[in-house]
Amino acid sequence: EIVMTQSPVTLSVSPGERATLSCRASQSVRNSWLAWYQQKPGQAPRLLIYGASTRAAGVPARFSGSGSGTEFTLTITSLQSEDFAFYYCQHYTDWPLTFGGGTKVEIK
Amino acid sequence: QVHLVESGGGVVQPGRSLRLSCAASGFTVSNYAMYWVRQAPGKGLEWVAVISFDGSIKYYADSVKGRFTISRDTSKNTLYMQMDSLRAEDTAVYYCAKDGLEGYCSSGNCYTHNWFDSWGQGTLVTVSS
View (cartoon, rainbow over the protein chains, first blue to last red):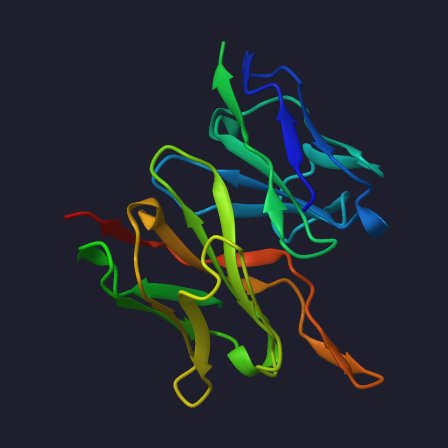
């Protein structure tokens, strides 16, 4: 099983600033098959990024994904009020599919 | 427009059974792999099960293997999860989710893509005596 570790657990950022979230895999994620999701309290997750760097339909350009192998990053430039939420990474290289423990992006 | 609506959650005693449903609209479940993902209260996301677009592939997380069964009814465009021998640790919001791309078969093997581009609103299952 590939274990996904996200850091930091909580990220305090001021509106308008940049947020950088990390996701590390316990073994190489083949073909960069990694996705990022955003979840707000009481809501279902929303797909942001797949293939490590491809934005899903309707996702603003301030969200970008990068990385390969075992190290991946989600960057949110110029944080907006609606971006304060939980973020999860997920590999889809093999079974079982696993998620990281999440990063909470909160208002500083 | 894709829409997923889960139902069937509730409070159930340990050892009992429950069946969840996920009604899909805006697409055809026979073209996409479908998934169940759960989230225990205050916790992160856990993938539970998958059924491929053609129904030939079914995989489960070890935590539910042998107790949960995923299925679908293409005539109703609906996904199901039969949950037997429920335990307290199965308490969670259960989401159904749709694969990001249509499934396909090649050289006798069929494939799923395994990322989730649409999610339902979730249904809460509470296992408690």
